[in-house]
Image (cartoon, rainbow, N blue to C red; front, side, top):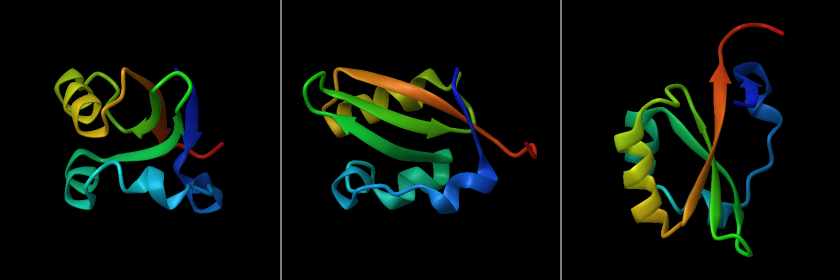
Length: 79
């Protein structure tokens, strides 16, 4: 899985329409952050602290109407 250090999150530029795909309370509860949509592939890239949480991944797939979810692991470790 690709890893993004938590310290780098402040520098990410995420389009507002991407953030709107996941309700804020769900993102906070599940510790996820939508990063990017690829409309051509109908996929959503998602930053997660628990990439093995298949239930959340499936729920986000439905909410975001995405065929595919690309997972990025959020790391708290300094790089």
